[in-house]
Every structure is written in C-alpha cells, then in structure tokens.
Length: 596
Image 1 (cartoon, rainbow, N blue to C red):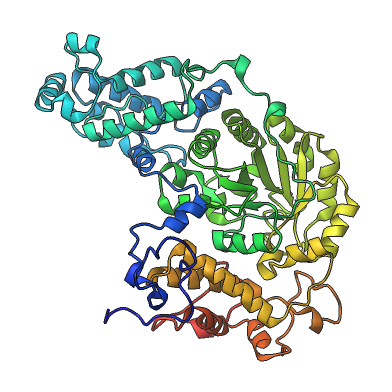
Image 2 (image 1 turned 180 degrees about the vertical axis):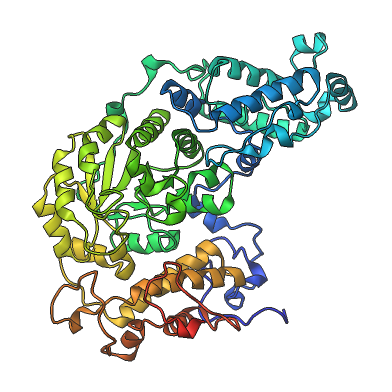
C-alpha cells in the first residue's frame, strides 16, 4: 500500500457494473470501491461487453505451427496459387517424411535456402531440425507413458499392429492424403507434424474435436471440397453500406474506446485497426487485440493486410472461426514504408494479378463479405483503379473503398474526388463503391453524394479524429458550435471507455493516457465554428495560434505536447516523473523542443 500511487479523482469505471472491480487494491480508484465487495479474479465486465479475444489453445497451436487451414489451402490450390517458398516447403516436407520413416536426419544432404516471406515460417527448416527419435525409441516412449494418463484415444487396429499411432495422427495423415497430392505446390507448414509431446497432441486433438462439434454436422459435409456446394459470390451475405456513416480503420487512434465514442456520436459502421496477417498467424496477442469488438458496435468489420494469397486465405479462415465480425476488409492502400517494403498495402496496386489472387482466395475461403480498400494508384498521375474496378467485383469483393490519393501523395494535397466518381460510374452493379478523403462537414458529405449518386457512402477518417461529432453534424445537417466543456465531456467519456478496456490499475491508466495524447495531437487542429470567418473549416487548413473564447478552448487549440499533457492530467492525474510524449504519426502538430 505504501508503494501504491495515490488514488485518482473520480469513480472507478467498473463501479456501475454488477461485478466487483477486477483490479482490486491495484485500482487507481480503490477508494470508491464498496467495502464488502469481494475482489474479482477476472474482468467480468470486459467478458460481457467485448468479444474476439484470442483463445489460449488456438494461440498455442499457432505458436507451434500446428494449426490446420484445410479450406484455405484447398481454395488456394484450386486457384493454382502458391507462395514463393513452395519449393522450400516441399523440401521440408520430404525431410520430415524421411525422419519419420527411418529415424535418420538428412539435414546435411540439403542446404535450405531461406527466403523472406510473410506467409512461411522457416523456423523448422531442415537445417534446424532437432535429432529425431527412431521407431524403437518411440515405442519405448509409448510403453513408459500409459495411454490412460495421456488421455489419447488409440485406434484398436493400429494397436494390434504394434504401431501405437493415435487417431489424431491417422486423421492428419488422411487429411493430408485427401487434400494434398504429391505435387502440391502449397505445402502447409504444419503438414504431417511429428508430435513428440503428448501434451501438445492432446491440445490439438481437443481443439479439433471442439471445432468439429461446433461447425461440422454429423455427416461431415465439409470433409471434402464439393464445387457443387460452393457458394456463388452473388449468394453470399451482403452488407448494404448505402447512406451509412462509416468510421474508417485508423491506425493507433482508431482503438476500441475511440470507436465507442464515435458510436455514441452517430457512427453506423466501425472497423478495427489494420492487422498484419503474418502476426495474426503467429498468434501475437498484441495483433489479435486489434480485432476486439465492443457490444455497441452493431455493424463491425476487421481490416487485414498481407502480401500473398495463401497468407490472406489462411487469415480470413482463422478470423471466421475465432471471431464475430460482419465483414473482412483487405487493405491494399496502406502507404507506410514498412508495409510496402514487404509487398503488401499500396505495393499490390503494382501487381494486379496478385490482387486478383488475394481477393479470389479470400472470397472463396469464407462466407463473410470481403471488402477492399485501395488508393488511386502507386505513383501520382498514374491512376489505375478505373481499369481494374470491373474485374474487382467479379473476383469476389462486395465493396471497394477508394482513397482519392496515390501512395506517393501519402496525405498531401486534396483528394481527387473526380477520379473517385469516374471509378464509381464504371463499377458493376454488384460492387458497392465508397469514397474516402477530406470529408470534414455535412456539406462535404452532401456534395459528394449529390455529385455522384453511384457512390454508396463516404468513409470518414481524419475528420473523425479532429472532430468525432462530425457524425452528429451529418445526421442533424448542421454545423455544431460545440463548447469547450462539451468537448471535455467527450474526452472524459473516452477516458472511462479506455479504463474499462485497458484497465484501471497503474498500467491501464498510463496506456489510456498514451492513446488520449495520440488523439489530442489530431484534435488540436479543430477550430470552433464561432471563431470562423468562413464556414466550414477545411481539413487542410493550418491556422496560426489563436485565443479561444475561454481558457480551456485556448488550451485545446495548442499545438504543444506540453499542453496536451496538461489536459491529460485534468482527466488522469499527474504524469510519472520524466514523462515525455511525441505523436506516433510524426505530424507537425507537436513541439519538438519541449520533448527532446
């Protein structure tokens, strides 16, 4: 208790819930807890209001590269698509077979050339295989570990033959034989795994049985891919985006608490932050956190980013199994260098055949609607979406969002809405087209919809970061001259949502503060309507410093990180000693001198 920081002002965010605060004495609002309330062992409120968490058994299978993606691999193989490492994969599988048959390791026979690829895990390349256990040692191991303790079901026939093989292993071999012929170029990383750990085998077997009981009927109609039963793209569930206010997926700031704020202010459709497929397939908890959904998000999608069809297909299959989402969006427009350098994001705009393979593989693997987000092109002045838009609908996408800038532009200059209109007019009737770029008032929204009736709706991105009440303005068709106190109340609501999501202990408070500061680095750009000579404000305006109508409004208009920190201290108490902050987006809206 002596080491515990002083309690913050205000009530515990969990005090209104029926369950006790899950953080007990560690809560920074412990003084407001009920005296007789027992300490909770888990976050009951979060369990009841948030979904799409990563199951521990699934995470273990992903860590050990033993997760099966039968549907995805069959679809990718049927399309004739394969990752660039298929030769290495095939070589690894051959080595695994040799190790399993004669117990000898042939790593010295082959030199595995590793190729960097986000769809392949080379952690089990032949050059790094551990020494294998031969057949005799395997039999001795089975005798030392009774089957009763191992909780594994043994096939009676195989036991009579002395093989000691489990039903799980035989089922894996059967599936491999059915879905992967010898010349299969898309070898799975987990194909024919030699399970040496009975605990791992038990986890995998239980997970497979659970999924089979949940998703597969007794007659196992999904055991083999039957083309006659495959859902035609026109028969898939569709989402009508027309006239709906769509909050764009926003990196860092578009977290779950911020989306909750936008929902209370009128947003209809929300989408999670962009998640990298490679990290999801590796079971990274931080990446899976981007897929979390709050119960208030009634129309919710997740956005993923990957470079190859097999990676995307496996990811969407995993998301459909483990998450509750209404649609899956594939990002083909991200301009960030680290994403483009891996062959994902905007780089795909230079590879139309790979775009085709990714969309076909994703739409063929899952029944959820697949949407795509793109930019006008990779280089400025070389737009290419208009030549592809007719095909994108036939490939299986149900909606296409076009950001009216090229990758080279990043976020500079105004969005090219004339080009967005041109693409929308060329789109087939089965493909919904959404526009994106510079929507900052209800007049902007009205003009875009009036100029091009073919547009289904417009996606709102940075405009929502600067003034999230934009959704209210559009629905009420007015310019809201919001006061500084009303803006502060919105920030208080965000802080409460943040503490519910990240926790009310010391770590949760500082995490909430960090993301609040990231948001304030955008929100400071807002100019109150009552101070404008020309209404409405434009997104690209960078006005000089000005005085607001009160001290709080002046403070909120500051572009200094020190002032943002002062606002955070009004809501979350004093910052720790030595605290500094610089926005992740590296905009000009912060004072470098005050932050080193």
